[in-house]
Length: 126
Image (cartoon, rainbow, N blue to C red; front, side):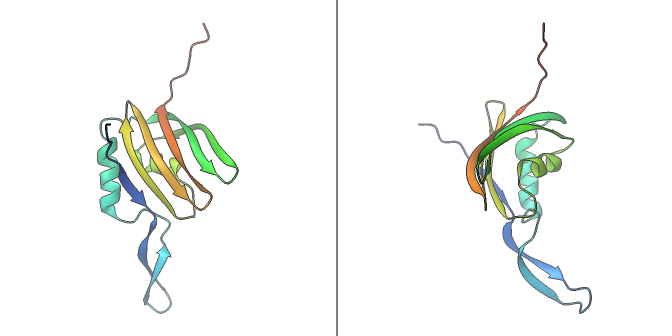
């Protein structure tokens, strides 16, 4: 049985928020961004040979009532990441590129599921 390495990027971490009135930092577990620059660098590295700006199709995005899919555009890996993860909530994404598809296990408050992202190419109607 072949095992595929899965990388991880997450918002479930600690970060510090600066109180502009007092100048004091307080720790928060809701960072609304990825946990570290290292995680984003790893994400960009894994996508180096695969990612090309354009249109993508995502399938299997977990929501509270099942899964959804659709098309999105991304100009760079960070836009790609924002498009395949939920906004304003904690999430964990374990991922890799397999057989010319981005495959990940996405977990967040509404559910967990396997997402598959492929490069979208319009089909000729001829």
